[in-house]
Image (cartoon, rainbow, N blue to C red; front, side, top):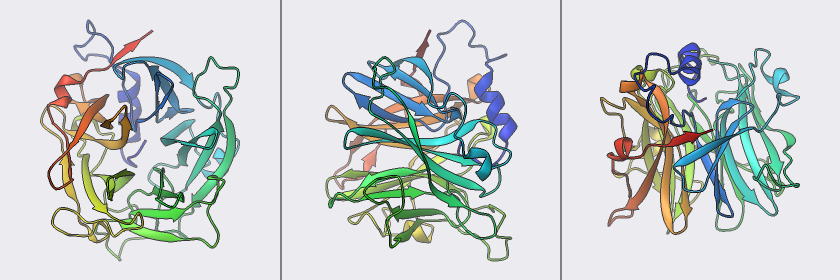
Length: 342
């Protein structure tokens, strides 16, 4: 879960549909922070939740819940955050060699007491005899008072040379990029770090305070000659009071600088709005972006006013304008409706 505010409201929204007026309609996928992969003819969707919740689908619309990645919790989680409640945040799924790598976050709410871990599997199919998640431990950890960044919200991108880079970060000093080693489970040495997106933060703030620099959820997508950096501004997890929206910049170098349509660097507070909230859907964000069967897709969650601000899965086709900037039709907020089947 991305936001570091209003924990109780986020949990309640995810657990109940009471008094929603939707009792007679097919149940939708209620989800935060969706990421997706395709294996064979099946799509697999992973999200924030107890042990990381995952789903499968043949058509990206009708989804079946398949359980959780961690039956209990990572053995190291409580050493990172003593108040860990079993919820693993903001996964990212990637394929490398003969394995799938699932990155995720352990954190304390409102603090940068956080770590990014990774678990691996040969297949995403729970029915396969090879299906077994194996925890590879901590990739990166942030410690309050030592670090002015937060080790949550990982995303891995491979550059043209075949090098894996992890972007991550929430609030504090913004979004970072760090090089991974060839195992994809640890940082490369010597370490190589970049600051690729941030918002204004007062130097007078205590370093332990997240402050008002509302930026998180990085996702880097390569299309043509550009790397596109998607980030979420605003606050998530507040139902109808959420202010989440998706911003974007691009660069010809994975390390940046990422510039918006006006030429402003995202590392200096820039960002072009890709998709923002409407009255019916006041907040949306924490997107992931993929190419499946020749089409590009934007995957994200959005809060629906008519359903008491409950978060819903949204999948939109991503198109491109004449200047190679991504375009999303906002009508998808109404036209895409997932169906959760028993």
